[in-house]
Length: 118
Image: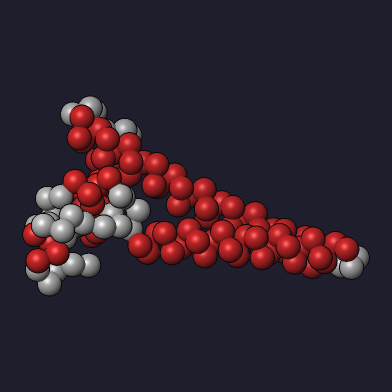
């Protein structure tokens, strides 16, 4: 996962927990309308978390399929091309980028030796 997706996943999780907690507090104070709205917001955050997790799983399956020469899952071919074009520095050839889901590079990776790092 790219750092932006990790950040969004974290923000969604924190917002979901905050909305659920304040929704429970609203229930205790007999504020039914506020509780419904807050629990609805928590549900929306759960949908967003699921979407981010599904994308991460698809990315891992795509990387595994590419590395082992298996057929790509579903629409993964398009997603893999887009992800590589936007997240992977053009000269990256290291294994660490793929195994850490785009969070770090090997020390000797050509991408770290250039100023193209995104």
